[in-house]
Length: 369
Image (cartoon, rainbow, N blue to C red; front, side, top):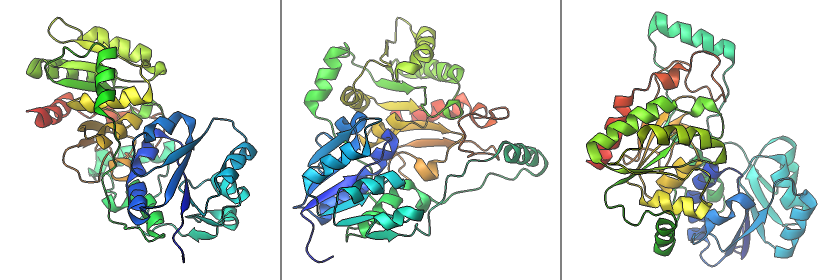
């Protein structure tokens, strides 16, 4: 590149956890182009995530189902010098192509390469999240009984944050990893505490996030969340905030009824918070016990330690925070079919059932005590 771009468009990713994992690359991009005006094209549901973020000057939002021509019209008005396309989809490349942005950079993926001015081959350290077949899972499960071989290890260098850093490095930015970072203000924290009657809580606040939007294979059983919460209560007398979406209402109500007692307050806020309120409340938690979900990534990026049982997914690929960060306790299943990356388990859900409550509770107390 000759002259440094003055107006940069970053085509963002569409899922909350993935968006958080792009923040190291965006911070490196800002570091490399401190004077550039950086705009993020993002799904409207994620736009508030970027408030107060130093890497981004503004966002352009789009809604589900919005036509590509409508998005293109917005982009043309921005008169961008360069577009960095983080998703690997053909549509994301087509958006910046139709907007006539002169420099268009992204990963090479089939025919979409024709829409980019610079298409980069996948990283040599990249590991594809391949879904196992039911037959493969059954075969692996039977083998472990015969041989005792552990499941395959995936190197930390395969983590998704490196995929985004590699792209920004193509523009001259440092590829040295940073921890994902998000920002909330003290005023936002105080407003959220006031709205949900948390101001008088003096002891530790623990977050519980028992749902997972992707599917049941990522969910540690509710019964285990209940037993773990009761044991944490016994050791800390802490209060609990239950997080989740509207679809988690029945699940969080079950847990709330089981752990509510006079000595330990429980605040069931599933489906009741905005994204900014969720961020503010995650910020005040001493620890978040969670499945592998978007809020897991948000909490870690705000500096809140997380404890996470991993079964169908891989912490090496999509774990929270900077890979290897000891503040977060990531508990892996030793099932030979893990990770399978499936939405539902085709056998006996051994990956999550085998993660013991005592192990999870000890991980939480290790952070607190």
